[in-house]
Length: 155
Image (cartoon, rainbow, N blue to C red; front, side, top):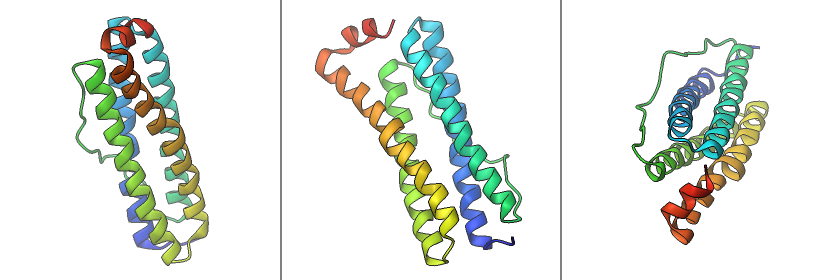
């Protein structure tokens, strides 16, 4: 099925964001592991898999629309140098993804590509209610119990 070229271009932009998130989560998970924060490592390694699934869904949809997925594009990584900075940087990535997903969903609606919109809605739910929410919770915990207590709980 030949898809709308602008939809395909938007999906490739979203794909670049997902690939960036994979890379950023991957390095952060390995840093957490190296620092001995096993719980953070496990959670962020899980996020790598979730982001990979999002990228896979975008790739499949682009191919279905007879487009070519562009896996060469990435946004700049924001690798943190502390736990709190890594959590904040990851939240910034998720908030940007949420904004972009909403924008592309609205465009898909405008061109009556309801199936692509639905794929993106599922990704948005996952991003808002799982990824971003969890990161916000962690930063809230740091604010409530202090960084040292938080870090001890993540070992």
